[in-house]
Length: 291
Image (cartoon, rainbow, N blue to C red):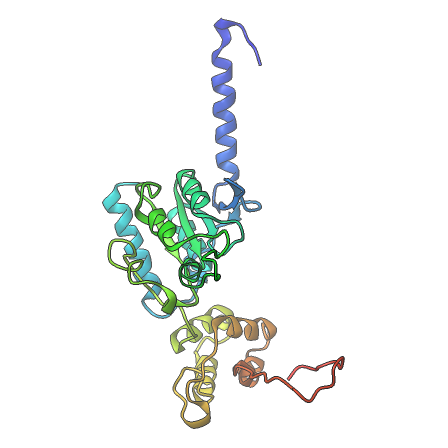
């Protein structure tokens, strides 16, 4: 574009208006970034901000994480993933995701991506334990493939590529694989286990689904008592000892019975984790049915 010198301010107005329109289009939404090659790119369209109230964690867990992050932001004087997305929406941040177990993710690529991290983004490093698998399980020739190493992950967290004013979340399904050097104070400031569903979570989820039709909470108490009787809060003995269920399973039950509160109570037994065993006697080529 060209213009006469006397009218050069037209460009400033055009660019300012374009920036304002782009900001308005993303207002009330959370942008999620993913690594694409050596650059960051938006993962689909910006997502509508997910309210923190829509994520049910055990009592006090959610509030503790939010308070910790807010405290961090206050000190810096800067303005397992559903919760992280909700947290980003609460703080008006974007989310930048990196899967450390992704093929082709190397130390150099990780360090480079962190130097290009989008502004005001929460960094989400998924499968953090994969770096420790690479550290301990190598081929006979000492090569374990192109992947992030333990030292590479440590440098990403507090090395030259770490940067300032950064909030990073690490997720893992195998906390026993995490090295003490990673989770020492200074690298990981807060650890929270988000595991099986608790009575508190089940009750909160019930209220979100059926609170309008269960005004007196009688149905809620029957449902919670049913889960107690089934030993699904880890309170069982004998055959039910160590039995739990997940919030995802409870949500699935409620969605299946979204217009039938009593149906959710009657079908609560379906929340018992199913055990699958190999059937050695099944002839080769036979069709196996679900247990």
